Length: 264
Image 1 (tube, helix red, strand yellow):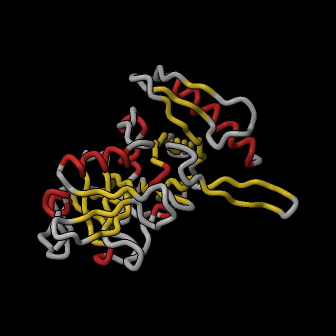
Image 2: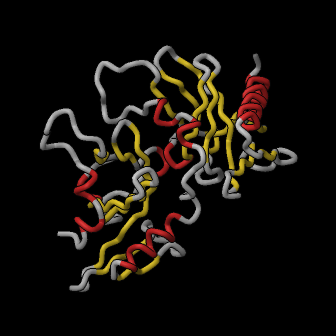
């Protein structure tokens, strides 16, 4: 089946699944929007949804985190980069429907269905993104950064908001001794018993550009504070009890703002 016809079929299936669950759905007129659907939750919140076809490779449901368009130069790819709230992925081979935050996806993503030989921290388990477990969303997409700033100020932390500047960081946090910490804000989510962030295009700038990373995780309703120099490309914080008491395990409870502020 041609890709665009397959996409139309997937979109029709997804709309039917949403309507079957009693979820109000609207479809934008024309092809000018980045999202495919608008879905409304019970509180009247409207979410921009991009429908994706998932392909089962025998172990994982794989889908793309970008769109493809054809122009005079050939095929071009464009990431969504905040233009939608969620990907809604349907995979016919496993009869699966998955809700994945756009911020958690890079150029593509694999959701593991089959058992793994080792429970590696980078695994995204399909069951963690099951639609019926993830809907309705918690409400932390567009204004979650404002909520983090408000929480910091409620803790009497001096916050300088740099989001409207060209700086590679969003905030500057000042300690009582006037030390300044360039701080990046990142969204996080729980998968495989760990808080994960800094995936794909959502990665924070390197340690030369920022000092701290604040991770807001909607699944745990918690904000975590991590020194940027403590990791290279990614780090995960364990929420579930580890199988082995390994000194290398980063426990989420040890990285809360309450435990980590002010930085050492």
